[in-house]
Image 1 (cartoon, rainbow over the protein chains, first blue to last red):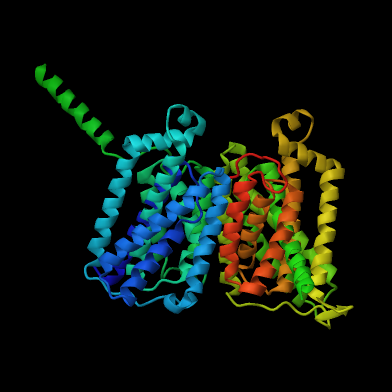
Image 2 (spheres, each protein chain N blue to C red; image 1 turned 180 degrees about the horizontal axis):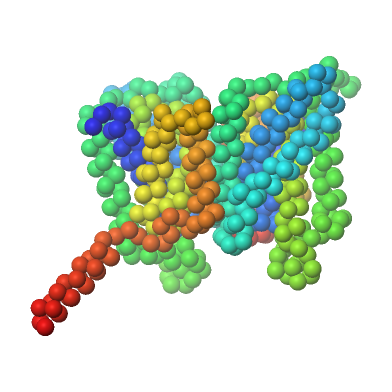
Amino acid sequence: MSAYQLSIVMLACISIISVCGVFAMTSLAGMFSLGQAAYMSISAYLTFCLARYLGWPIWFTAIIGLVASGLVAFIISLPALKLRRDYFALLSVGFGEMVLAIVILLGKWTNAAVGFSKIPKVKNLIWIVLAITALVVFMVRNLKYSRFGRMCMALKTDEIAARSFGIDVYRLKVKIYVIASVIAAVGGICFGLRNRVIAPDSFDWSLSSEMQILLFFGGTNSLTGSIISAASLKVLPEFLKGITLFGMSLQDFKTAIYCILILLILNFRTQGIMGEQELSLEPIRKLARKLNKAKKKEAVK
Amino acid sequence: MSIQLLISGISLGAVYALVAVGFAVVFSVLKFSNFAHGGMISACAYAGFYFQRSFSNPPPIYLTIIFTAGVGITLSFVIDTIAYRRLRKKQSPNIYYFLASITMSILIVNLLTIFFGKNLYAFPPIFENTTFMIGKIRFSSIDSLILIVSLAILTILIFLIDRTRIGLAIRSVAINPATSQLMGINPDVTIMAVFAIAGALAGISGVLLAMKLSVYPTLGSQMMLKGFIASVVGGLGSLGGAIAAAILLGIIEIFLTYYFGSLSMPIILFVLMLIFLAIRPAGIAGRFAQEKV
């Protein structure tokens, strides 16, 4: 594959990783955050700045970046999750703005609004990104079907009922928020490795809201649906390159087309393309079993 | 010096108040944060800019304001038709309104960028003297105009909501749509009225912001975050609370920017919000509404 195609695949992978993080938080636990991109920026800046200024290997600084994002998420969530859900969403917006301001304040190291571009090149990046994506998707899938995931769903449906079943709601929320933030942080590092430049603008609240939109586009409670929508909607604009309509290049309209698609889905299929369903091999297996049974019956006759 | 800062803070806060009230009025009835408001503000700023420019001798400023208010109302109806009407018929959860409004906002900003570019357009000057003195205090003409217009509009709005029949209808639909329908109130008409109010506010604040700053596509999005903060801190869906919070926000912003630089603002604001919401979760107005997101 050419370098361009590889970069598109990586774009889709990064989108999948970040939407998986949001899935864990919003679809499972019902928390709505508009500040997840901030964790992407924390981990990306820490990873690449430490690697640059201290000369440490990138895998080591990546771990530092992830741990730091987890810690920040933990510290922020302790007071913020005591509040009601809508205040939490508001605080997440404020948090995202705060992180961006800090990045610009530390302009001496982060190169402020111009963007930090001294990111080392990693060989075979595509395989690393694909492996990370597979791992993240697998982990989030397990999370959904585990006891922990079921506890989260109980919390999402009715907080008071969940509490009456002996679930420690507050601790659960903190845990899931930290998990979601670390997944977002993984996405941030991959983003930096792919683009080779990170700027504060690329991690503003519109990226966070885009993650939420992709999630709901795919289906409120469907992991496969969110993955499909995350990959396809992110890649879609790339296919519009070079197409011209009425003398205007569709490339300029990529975000507009993307928004119109989302509005159409919201209007005509509100629950998202997959709704609550998961894509699985189960129907095919059932069909195979039926066919087998029919064959056996005929053999008996 | 500090009096001067206070005055420009109040003037900035008055613009935030227009944005926040546009937010709060939609929230109080439909129970969602109308993020498309930011896009409307930007679009109206462009409309005002081109209206002002299209005449060889510029029209008086009040004409521009009325014109943009009209544009805002139209745009608001269009957005309602495109994005919200079907959701309302299906009685979807609030989260979908929220998503639709964010998408709508991104769409408007994107269309503006395509057609007008990312350049900043300076609004044609309205006053010959940019400042005037009263006693020893220097006033900025634009800031004073903004303050006067905002206060007038807010007064009219509060009168409209508190004293008129349509205001009564809006308040009752805000409390309970089903019961108000039993009382002979048409919820659809009320919702249209709410969107008209929000659109007019977006138009007016758009042209005022364009005069104060300049015209560019993300003008509204930046204001929208401030409006969102003010409307939540003020108390969900409460107009008075939103105005108070917005003016407070403007004053805090001006003082912080003056003493610590503009970058300190988001950091300190976040901490202040955290503390405030932890101490007083019901907001300034103290009225508890339903969950917002």
